[in-house]
Amino acid sequence: MSRRILHISTRLILGGSQENTVLSCEGQAEAGHDVHLAFGPIYGPEGSLLDRVKAFRTFDGRRITTHELPHMVREIHPIKDHFCLHHDLKSLIREIKPDVVHTHSSKAGVLGRWAAWKANPRPAIVHTIHGPPFMPGRGLATKLKNTLYTIAERFAAKRCHVIVSVADAMTEQFLARAIGRSDQFVTVRSGMETDHFLHAAEGEDAASVRRELGLWDDDFVIGTVARLAEHKGHDDLLDALATELRSRPSWKLLWVGDGWWRERLTERVGSLGLRDRVVMTGLVPQERVPAMMRAMDVLAHPSYREGLPRTVPQALLAGAAPVANDVDGTREICQHMETGLLVAPGDTDALREAIVWLADNPRDREAMVERGREIVLNEYTAEAMVRHLEGVYDRALTSR
Figure 1 (cartoon, rainbow, N blue to C red):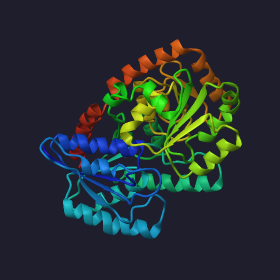
Figure 2: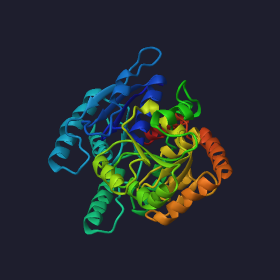
Figure 3: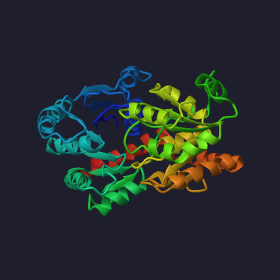
Figure 4: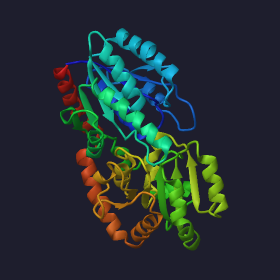
């Protein structure tokens, strides 16, 4: 049965939750649904998925209809939030009359669910938790912000039929804060395209990409694929590895991505005397990320906030063993000593030791990759995600 589905996301920048949303839209359009995607203005150095969405066509010419919401912003902004809710979102829902409203990310999740709940007729309302909105830290400002997010999420959960978690850890965290009911939650793993990570296109094998980046075949490459932004852990990598990078000429850091912290991180790399040890690619097209990952021996992902980090399963597909902070849903794919190594957030000594161990044990590293790759192909494909979402929508429509 064909449905009209409206996805609402705060920003359509390059990022895991946004890629998840776009893949959902594409799969649903290919399944015959009438798919709409609404989002706030896109700006800044982080890149955009909008060109991909606009270029998408199904085999019979069906497209994803896009809607820019001029007042949708990431930060709390009472005036813009008011206009986004009462003008942008309510008008859009009234105009297209969706069967299902599916919201993504915190701001779009709260405002989108509220607007959909007020609609007449009321659509089925689904929200996906891609990552925790709650910030790490103990300062007064952080506690206040987390309290506001908790209140907002409790309010929004009461105006929603089904809540999708990309990792079981998200469900546990939300229920621990008395957000939603246990029977509202269902886990749907974040799906991804696998073929580009498994199979190299011509000229995009590991050796070719390393030559392009100025890396040698025998270099030990520790890579990250993340925005150059707060909580992604780039400073921790420098703190952990500065001495090793100076003493081991074959060790290199490969940072894929861009962001607001680029200038500061570049200056810090220089001040540590590591300019010839750190390769910063800047923003690369999404289709080139698999090639960048194939150039890595290890994916380092010391992020302080994650739902389920898509870069970890993607790295396993591409052949890089992960070491990651043990936060949120990361351990559900980076299983310690099975499919990667986990370290405590902020423990730079443990981060260094984990990377040294992976460098010194290549056979164990390869075995981790093989075990992880099998799990990813069974549980983390875009096709499996879209299939599971069909069942979620059936459930939400029945609940409505």
